[in-house]
Length: 490
Ligand code: NAD
Image (spheres, rainbow, N blue to C red):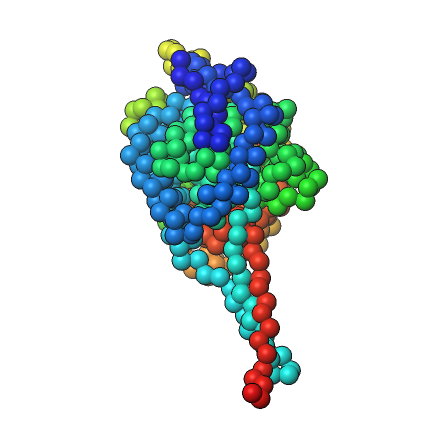
């Protein structure tokens, strides 16, 4: 059986405590994972500080750019291994792992190599009344040892989204992937070793959250900052731990995202887009729409067309290139989603399609499969309309006016993303600006330019990452203020 070890201070470290990495396709064990105890996390953080005091701390931006590109090249060379590992852990379809997860993971290193190599630094001149002036300029230094805690839904993509800018800015990192998806992070550690990243600059520890490696990182007195993607509730726990040492945090959290579909949209384009927004990664993308508002004139047409498309959707073996949807991440998560199906019934929802688990008559019946599901008929205050479910389920409801739908879409404690479908240019701008979210898409969904700010309002996050926003989070900026005297008689 494959063993997934920790990587600390440039060494592979076993643990006497292990846990199983289980495939959600059929419930089989794909690897044994070595869980890091508190001492190993402590060793990783110490190794990070030693790296910063040594060779790694002296690397120039130019040298780090070369290193990031070497990491990307090495990942590309091992692309097939990464795809296989991501699919084994998550059961996500080949079409997705090979076109989104792994290429984006590689792109994160190339993008941040480009961004750091051209990143401007501020400078301001302040004229003073006596004719002298002050010249201010900003220097960028690493924050220190950054704790990176990531989720299971886009494992490599979301982890590298944080590791790449953190290393670009010269930090050391202690990375903890989700316990559900340890494989691609372990491959990334192999890549770091092969690319010649100095010992201690990149450390990987495996484990869970509470009473395990996640908690050991977030409440460690010597961690310099924490960057986290995951559930809002976990963010709140980590924030409490970080508050003790007043540590900087960057949080990308949950969502209950709205889709606003106007009758004047390009219907077929919208339907293609909405199938992705609802069911990509079995609905397990933080940006997926779970609340769908449709202008009344096309409401019935939309519901009928959506149900038809779902019936034609290929929910099948992940390795089949035509498969569009695989299982959920785990039996535990499926139980959670099924609880919401039950709750929807209690709340009086109508199921337009789905609502159960598919039966295949083979080993997949031991996996974590679930039916793509559409419900309707709930009030806006129903729990199924307010709480993040994180599965292939959405609630559809009609609306009558632009003002009404803006108010209903914004009536949430979350604020991650929205997607608006219309051919009216002014409405597109007006409505997207009115959305209280981090990203508002128009006639598209999940189209990402990595230079742009990414994050969420309300319960969906703290801060923004992406482009210069990432560099600013992962840097300690120092303003140097130099007084320049006015010319004096010689
Ligand atoms: P999660 O919060 O359960 O776990 C995320 C990570 O935090 C895991 O590595 C876990 O081990 C760790 N963790 C859990 N409890 C911890 C604790 N007390 N201290 C320290 N670490 C702890 O989230 P998940 O179930 O893995 O991911 C799904 C969630 O992530 C959804 O809510 C989804 O919306 C959100 N998400 C948000 C974004 C975004 O960019 N905003 C992206 C992807 C996923």
